[in-house]
Length: 90
Image (cartoon, rainbow, N blue to C red; front, side):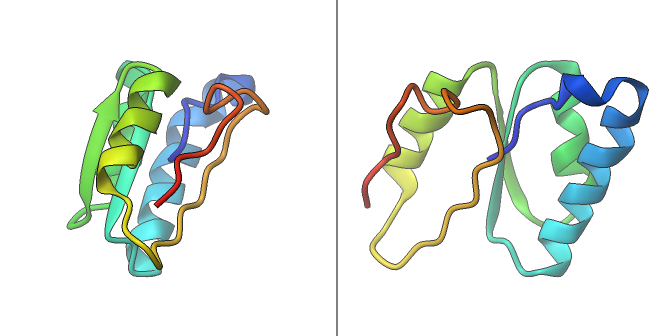
C-alpha cells in the first residue's frame, strides 16, 4: 500500500513506477495505490500484479480489512497517520 509520494516532486511518477516494478519482481500478489492520477504509476509499474487505486487512506484500510487472511504480509509506506492510526487485523 503506497501513497503518491508528493514530497518527491517531479521524481514521484518514476519512483512509483519503479516501486511497482519491484513489487512485481518480488512476487507481490496485490498492490494498493492511494491517491489520484499520480497513484496510477504504481500499478502500471507492477504489470501483471492485481491492483486497486483508491482515493484515500480510509478506503485503502477498509479494502485491506476485507482482503487480509492469516499469514498475509503487508508493506505500507506512508505517513504515521496513513491508516488512521490503526492497521487492519487479519
